[in-house]
Image (cartoon, rainbow, N blue to C red; front, side):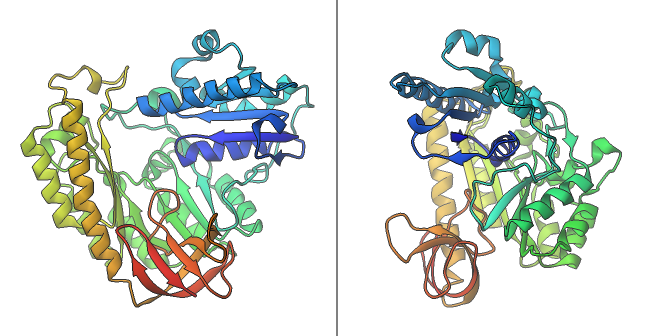
Length: 433
C-alpha cells in the first residue's frame, strides 16, 4: 500500500505513527507526493495552541490538495488534537476526513484503519516487530509508557493521554531487540516522565532495573534518557547509570520549567525547593554529565524579579541544552484561569533574552570540544552538499539539540566514526573523519 504520512509534535507521536503503519498486515511503501498515495495519514499534536494550529493547517492543506486528485486517497487523521477536541466536533468542521483516530483508542488504530480500508484484520504483532521506522539507521525512539500522573497547572497531557500506563518490561526489551535487529545503533527512551515508569505496576523506582536489562542488549551502542522529572532523579538512578556505564549515556533531560520557588508553586510542579539540589546531585554522581532542560517564561504571575532570578540561574548552572517556551494559556488548564496573565510582548521578550543567554553558554561549552577526537553517529546525507552528512556526538540528542556536520572516509548513515572536531557555532559542531 502506498502511503504518505506526516507526524507532528513530539517523538511519542512518531512512535505511534511507526507502529500503526507497520501493523496494518500489508506491505507499506512511503511516497513523497500526497497525490500518489492510496492513503494519507496525519498524526496531530494538541499540546498547545500553536501546535493545534499547525495540525489544523496540515489537515486543511491535505483536504485542499487531495480535492484536486482524480482519485482521492483515503485520509485518516489521528493523535492528540483528536483526543483533545473529539472526533465528533472535528468531523463537523472537516467532513472531508475519512477516519478520525482518537488517542483513547490508540491500541485499536490498526484494526480501525484496516476495517475502514477494507483490509483483513491485522495479525497481532510482537512488540516492536510491527513498526515501520522513519528515523533512518542511526537511532529510534523507544516509548515505555503512556499518560502522566502529575498535575502541572499548565499541562493538557493528562486530559489528552490519560493516566500513566507503563509498558511491561518484557515488552520493552522485546521491542528494543527488534529495533536493534534492524541495525539501529541508538535507542532513546521516551515517556511523559521516565522516572514514573512502573509505578502503576506496583514497581516504585523501577527504572534502574529496566536500564540494567536494556544495557546488556547486543548491538546497542548508545542508550539515551529523555524526560526525567526532577523528583525521580534519585541517588539510586544516578548510581545505576554510573555503574552500568556504556551504552548508557550520561545525558539527562530534566524539564525544570522554572527556577523560582514561587513560580514552581504556581505551576504545580512536583517539587518546590531549589532545583540546584537535583543538578548538584547529578553532577556529583556523574561529573561528565550533559544536562538538558526546558523553561516556561511569562507564566501567570511571573514578575521581572522572577524572570531575573531565572536568568541568573541559567547563567550559573550552565546547561548544555535549554529550550525556552513563551507560556500559552490552554483551555481546560488551571493556569488559564489564574490572575496576572503576562502580556504577549513581554513573554516573547523574555523568551528571546533567555535564549540569547543560553546561546552564549552553548557556544562556550561546544568550543571546549574543538581540537578533540570524538565519536560521531552519522544520521543522514546533507540534502545540498555532496559528501557532507549530519550526525551527532554523544552530547547531542536527535531533533531537539544541535547537530555535527561530518565528512570523510567511512561516513555513511548509521556509522559510528571517530572524528576530529574542527569548528563550532552556538549550537553545532563540524567534524572530519
